[in-house]
Image 1: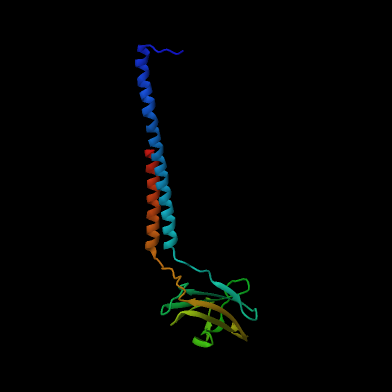
Image 2: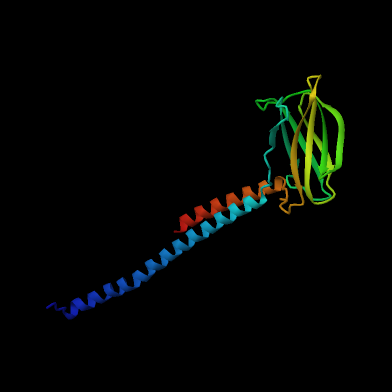
Length: 204
């Protein structure tokens, strides 16, 4: 049987008190660390969501071969998701079969909604740049067909070849575009998260 004298008991009690006091303190520090980790994780998640929301949407150009297979035609709209009444650019590029620029193309463009032609340009010529941007304004929501017709290459006429693309107007998925301010905000946010992380590590 273990016995403790009065003298030894006096020395044992402070040790017991230290043990029971120190344990909750350690637990509190652990909670603090977890809280910091959660805060940093939340900040990083918020930054990622903000970056996604603020980044403008850029749709990759659609590339199709012409009906005769002589060349490829690249097509995209700016904005990527046009709305009725908005100024929209039809961006068209003429490409060789290896998708490099094909200069000096004679072409014309027409836009239809169903059987009704709502826009068109006569035969035109694109020079060395091999690409053109055509402004158009869609008056109503719906699906439109944009037909690019090629009639000549390098000043030589060819039998007409076409490539047709679909444009959906008023889809409700338009994404706002942000300028340099968006990049500045993102950079400041990233810097802030890094500084907070370093300070948190120093205080843990």
